[in-house]
Structures are given as C-alpha cells and as structure tokens.
Image 1 (cartoon, one colour):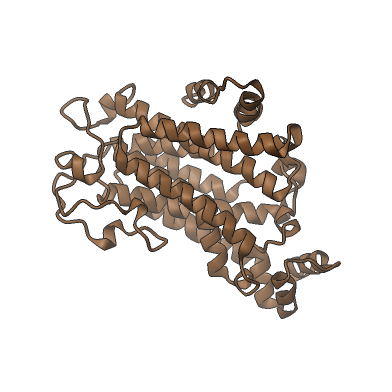
Image 2: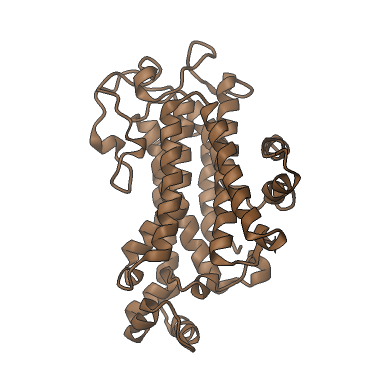
Length: 374
C-alpha cells in the first residue's frame, strides 16, 4: 500500500521525449513490478532509523567503524575527526534536518522532507537495479525477465542499451537533487561495484571460477553492494553520521541481506521451475557460471573441477554437473546453510537498532528471503 505512490511516480520520472525510449524504460515499472525488494528495504529502513536519536558526539571516526565489507571505504568520506550526528552534519555526511528540533522522530517523519528524500532514494535504487537488469540481459542474451520478454527482445539491443543508460542518467539527476554529497559518493560507488561485478563475471580466470571467495565477492558487487550502500545512505538522509553505529548497522544489514538474497537466488536456479522464477532455470550454468551449490558439489566430486574451469563448454558438461549436484548429500544443504548464515548476520545487525515495527518487519523480510520459492 505504502509503495503505491512509488509505483505511480516512478513511471513519470522515467518519461522521455522519445516515445520508444520511454516505452523501453517504463517496461518493468508498468508491466511487471517484480518483487519491489529494494524500495521496500529502503522504506522500512527509513522508518527504523527515524526511531533512533542521532549520536551527537562519538569522537573521531575509526577505520574499524567506517570500513565496509569489501575492505574499502564506501565513498571514501573524510570527516577529519569532527563531531558526527546532526551537530557536525557538514562534515559527517548526515543531511541537515529541518523538521522539529533538527531531529527526526517517528512522529514527525512521515510526510517530512526527510521522508520524501528517503522515498526518492528508493526510486533511485530501483532505477539503477532495473538499468543493470536491462544491460545484463543484453550481455547474457536472455530472452525473458520477470515473467515477460526482456527489453532487447521487444525492441533491439541498441534500444535496450540506451534505455539502461537513460535510466542511469535519470537516477543520477535525482541523486543530485537529494543535496547530500556523501550519499552521491556512496551511491556512485554502488554503480562502480555493479560494473566491477559484471566484468568479474565475464573475465574471471579458470582458477577463480572454483573459489568460493571469488563467487561471494562477485555476489557482493552484483547484488549486495547496491543494497548495503542504499541502507547506509538512508541513515545519512535521516540525519545519522556516516560513521555512526546506526549507519554502520544499516550497511552491515544490507551487506548480509544482499548476499543471502543472491545465494537463495542461486539455489532456486536449480530447484525452481522457469515458470515460477519468471526467468529461465539453469540460466547461470548456460552462461558458464558456477554458484554456491555447484562449488560445494565440486569440493565433494573433484571430477567437476575441470568442467567448472572451462565454464561447462563441452557437450555433456552441464548434465554431468547436475547429476553430481543432485547425487551429493551435502552440496545443496551447505548452500542453504550459507544463505542462513548471512541472513542471521543481517538480523544480528538489525538487533543493534532499537525495537520498532519497521525493524521487526525487516527481520521478517530477511526470513522470507531465504525461504522464498521464487
């Protein structure tokens, strides 16, 4: 219900003077809404952080508190050791709050300028995500997406590439309108990560294809990065400083939630039928990619290793890998355990925030992510 204004306005936001570009860009927003997973997270996270008073003096930011999980600083924000929270908003990355006494509360949050900007961030995140799907489908030559034809099949590769570019351009304009340079830097880093993940998928060495660490890093770049940076940005827009415990807990939640989501997606690629998924089953293997279930099977059955390293290019490779996977008594269970591990870490991060209805809804959503069937 609360996402309805999001659905209505996003179609207007992606309108263009060029009819074919407008039609292609609006394709996913009007025809099939997908799971609306990312804007739902942003909206619930916005309500969750509104229930927490910003830290007004937590001292100099340490590398430990601000370091993100890929070992780099998200956006490389430097606050020169100045106070955080609302008091030091110019240096901390927190947006200046112009409601109440300069502090967002559950009572003054809904309908405020802060709430509007956080809702717009949800739209920006979905636009970036959809643009990445359109571009991915061109690269992967995928025929279907979200239960319908992919954009490049409906129009052409050129129109699909331009539609994806246009969505990214519109997202960039809306991002600038949030008037928070820290959030712009953070979300620009998320865009960079999406590209890094796609390059990693295309150019990984045969040895890297066998490594679980490489698989998880690619999953972080392609899926978790956008979610975790969006979660931290939501906290900043709510008046919390970049290195605050609130913003850090938000990013940690997004990081682990994103990985749990992707691992579950990879499990469903083997266990769900194509008509349920809304996209072809076994799509990853068709692209020569090995995900958690196959990597665990390869640990148990060494004869799978050369198949993984050559991206299942020889006749019979995919069939042999599938037979080994379903013969294994542990591979699929280990993959499910990995998804559960990250889901639990996501919940642990949430539990560092005060209890609220929205926080509890995020806990339930995390459970849904690893138990869903599509």
